[in-house]
Image 1 (cartoon, rainbow, N blue to C red):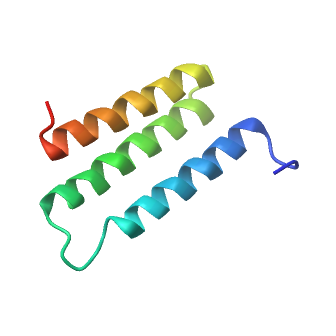
Image 2 (tube, rainbow, N blue to C red):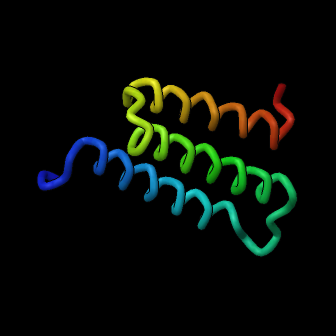
Amino acid sequence: MTGFSRRTRRLLIGLTVLLSLSATARPAEAGPREDCLAVMGSFCFVTAAACDMSLGIPASFCDKFFITCARAAVQFCYGLT
């Protein structure tokens, strides 16, 4: 991905990961936990992307936010706390 900026590469990688996770986490027998994780994961991704791209917040903070948000989503949806 040599023609893209660092932000664009991160956005494309994040979007690819999100789409692949939602495709694999949505089998016919998907339950409420998978639905919860799909919604929460989308929220984390969109918020982190907006944070980095339009609000002018440092990318390192937005990356840390995304990781923390994704971990919290898994804990919340799967009751691991």
